[in-house]
Length: 227
Picture: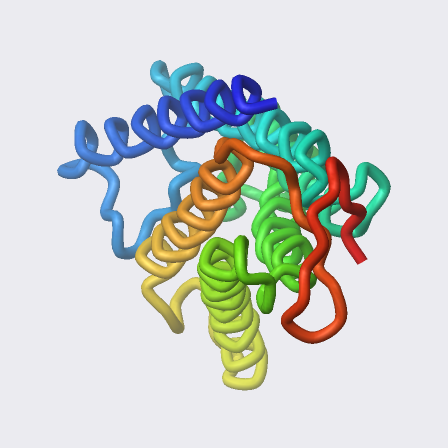
């Protein structure tokens, strides 16, 4: 399972570097403050963006499998389901490119938007749920607290976007006009990928998983379901 976590971390790192490379290469054309990351899915280099998201999704699944194998999370737990939903959302967003809504509605564009919403909501939930039982455990307290903090930070980014949409609706404005959407989305993406990396490092550590017990006590076991 350590190898699965290491492979997952490698895939996540490669995917993140591809997306970052696109951001830097097209900095003069795509304003990172106003234009979303999905803009890279349009045009001749859209396949690179799709590849980056696919690597992130594959790496996330490998990390999730390692967490289950180590006993940090149960295979049917809500945290594992949320992590799988994050990967599925990324794949959907990669397959269906962003649409220019100024020219009218689009089924593919709607599917892309749903995939992005599912992904961005699922990762913080996965981080918070997986880390929760381990936050007082002496062996895994630090990674659990780090994952929880990053999960909470990711959720705050999501709530910020939701608040911007609500303000726009109330004021009769376009929701992307009330905030630097590109900057907010990139901040959220960085926070969520950081949470994923910490989960991967946690899964990659050697030794038996430890089941959280009452209070601060812990009992070493080969596996431990998430509660």
